[in-house]
Each structure stands twice: as C-alpha cells, then as structure tokens.
Amino acid sequence: MSDKNNKIPFNEDNYTHNINRNNERKLDRRGFMKTLVGAAGVFAVSSLPWGVMAAKELNRLGDKKYPKHKIADLDKVPVGDAVDFHFPGEHDSAILIRLSEKKFVAYQNACTHLRCPVFWQKDEGEMLCPCHHGKFDVETGAPIAGPPRRPLPEIHVKVENGAVYAVGVKRYEA
Amino acid sequence: MKRSYIPVGLLLVVLMLNIIFTQYMVHQYFYENYTNTIIAAVVNVLLFPVAFIIYKKGVNVND
Ligand code: FES
Image (cartoon, rainbow over all chains, first blue to last red):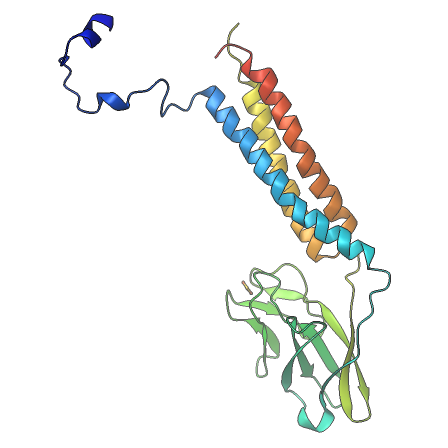
C-alpha cells in the first residue's frame, strides 16, 4: 500500500481510484443504526403536528357550535336525489340525499380512504367513491366495500319552513 | 468485545413501534379521539430519545 502510492503515476488499473475514501459506501452496523435513529427522529418530528392539531380540537370541543346552514329548498330536491353543499366550513364538501318524502341524510363526502368526493348512485342505492371504488351505506354512512374503513361523518339535518338545514356534525361514538 | 446485534434488533423494534403508533395516531385523529391521538404522538416523540440511547450504548461495543 505505502510504496504503491509513492510511484507517480502508480500503476493501478483503476481510473476511479480517487473516489476510494475510508468506508465510503459501506453500510456497516453503525451506519445502519444511525439510519434507524434518524428514522425515529423523523417519526417523532412528524408526530408533532398531529399532537398539536389534536390538542387544539380538544380545547374547543366543549363549545363546538355549528352555524345553521341552509342546504336547499324542499321542492328543489326530488325524492331519490342528492345535492352537494359545504358544511361546516366552505372547504368541507358534503352531500344531502333525500331518501323518501320525509327522510333526509347528509354526510361529509370526503371519502374516508383518501378523501375523494363520494357521490350518490341513485340506481344502486349506495354511495360510491370513484377513486378506488369504495362504497358506503346511505342509511348509516358505514363503509361496505373497498378500501375505506371509517364511516362517513354524518351531518344532522332539520327540515324547517320548506327548507333543509344542516345543524351539526355527528360525533363518532368512541 | 464481540460486536453485538442486540442494539440493532432493539432499534428495529423501535422502528416497528413508531410505525404502529403513527398509524394509530392518524386513525384516532379522524375518529376524533383526540386524547388518544396525543398519547400516540407523545409515545412517538419519546421513542426518539430511546432510539438514541440504544444507539449510544450500542456503538461503544466494537464494530
Ligand atoms: S379515496 Fe375513496 S376509495 Fe380510495
């Protein structure tokens, strides 16, 4: 090794000799453990926003009041039809379905798999997510097929003076 | 001393726990069980120093 390096140019049949550094490109036990510790660090850091969001929700949970929101006039929604609306915020898309003369159901329609908009299939009588073919039960919002595991959040509706109003979002039973 | 792979195994266990708690945290968040979300997040954060300690103890053994 030592006498080899003193010859200029030393005869080595290797044009890339100058990239040989100590332990470069070697994943030894120590390097692997470093990677694992780094991964733990990434997990820790990425948990923080969730904790913060949860803490915020927890703080204002008690006085969570929803503004009453008019969805549609009764005569604009024939039985079996659906209308889209937004509730409680303007970015929370939701869907109202008229199941019968008296019966309305409403859900936040961001799919519980990856948040694609779920729509109402009148002929099949189920709600379908176009992205990966997730299906939801209209009566309860429960997932019945495909990837979603969590029911759609149900919105409480009220019929008043010939119009339908959204009045709140149902909490999941813990 | 002979090198030991026990710390490596322990770190892999930590990584597994990280994955489990992250999954749990996200799901509990959407289920609106915010207390559970916070617990999972805290566990995830605490796992980092644990990993670091395991590493510190582990590298001193010859490798
Ligand atoms: S986003 Fe709805 S099934 Fe995947």
